[in-house]
Amino acid sequence: MRDPTRVHERGEKEIQELWNTFKESADAKAREGLILHYSPLVKFVAGRIRSGLPKSVDPSDLISYGTFGLIDAIDKFDLERGFKFETYAVNRIKGAILDELRALDWVPRSVRAKAREIQRSLAELEHSLQRSVSDEELADHMDMPVETLQNQLGEMSNLGFVALDELLNPGERDSASVGDLLADQRALDPGGSFENAETRFVLADSIGRLSDRERLVVTLYYYEGLTLAEIGQVLSVTESRVCQIHTKAVMSLRNRMIEPPY
Image (cartoon, rainbow, N blue to C red; front, top):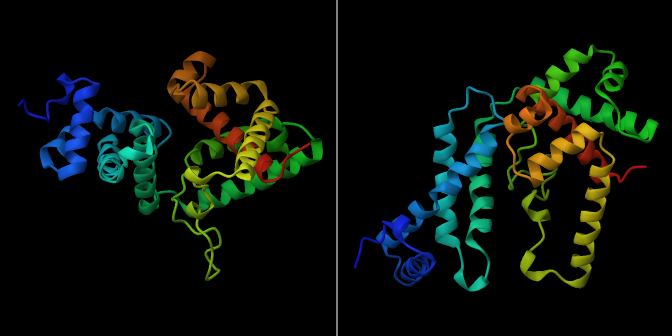
């Protein structure tokens, strides 16, 4: 029998054999083979996350964090569920990386405070005007230069990261966590399916109300899988400018998902 860690030479049937061997006997070599086979997923997820992080963050650290997520996914994956492992693993890998970034607490409090102020001002202005607003309008509303606003948006481009165990109301003893609010996909009742469809509708409608450039950035990033640098090439702007546009778009979507707009 060939070394099971040489999975790059194996087809789908042989990978399934590795899964069966590992789940039946916890064979260490089969486990190693699975880790090596699926390791490109870690690089893919780390690369996507890295594109929006400060240059001071070492890519190798992200890969290290993500590898722990991959190992956890392999250990916990249930072959009987019928799920595609890659989909399950990507979520685990992403969660592991983001949890580590949150634990590092590398975002200054001042940046978080600015983010709350901009999001609040953006919600007020969009509610007042009943439409998407430009950077110039938002900057004028906040009584600051447009360049200052855009620089602040760039600084806070990574504040969307959240750990699943983060409490929604830290001051309350029985506060729920973000993870508590995630639906169990194995037990969606008709009501849950309706809520899911309604959420998709509200999200699609909210995306449609973004400005043309914001909508294009969201579409290319989340639906087409382009990196921020690649989107910059499409729009003929810098990567940092794409970060600013993306951050403002996400803030608008968040406001509208909380309170469906106009």
